[in-house]
Length: 268
Image (cartoon, rainbow, N blue to C red; front, side, top):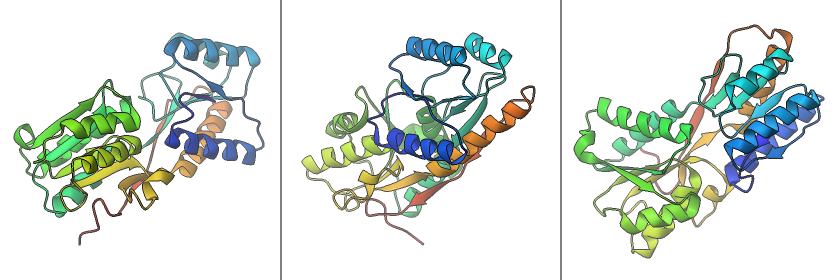
């Protein structure tokens, strides 16, 4: 498995689910943490030399030439929450577009009229997908996104980025959707420093449903990524590709669900 930023709460939860599924299937895991696209290329080449049974990539976009080396050696490659672009690679992704629609519907049902989308810049592919889908969902539901959707782009990642965005956010915003849980928690604390609380002053929805989001101090309404289902599907794609290396690339979309908590309570 190729991972990055293992300290990230969602990535560590996903890694744990993958390790459990790999062991359940009777395999042993070799885990390598990368810090750059160059690391990814070197690690993928090293895995190919080890003649591993398969490679799961959770971070970065593997170079097509190296993937072709794996394919030629009948080593299946699966990308998780990666942009599906390389022939011969199978992908397992959370349904980001459906999650963004759930967030849009929840905020609209709650009476919000001025919206914000919070993401780190530059964004991951999954983050871009969520933001674009959120804008489309609002627009198709009658919102003038040119006037009533603010893009909150922070230069820092994670919790620190959320704090940074909160310090600059327009107090007129009523419903904010965040690309991930750490951004959302940072934004919530940053707004508290300005004397504003959710849901009294604004509503907030995150993405990931990491353990921190359920803690009493946050109680964040969030989209839940089913890491157990992602892990099962990733191993299934590896085994299918190993049995039939020439089959067309396949993308599996895993359902996400909206977990209602304090920052945007359930509305009938």
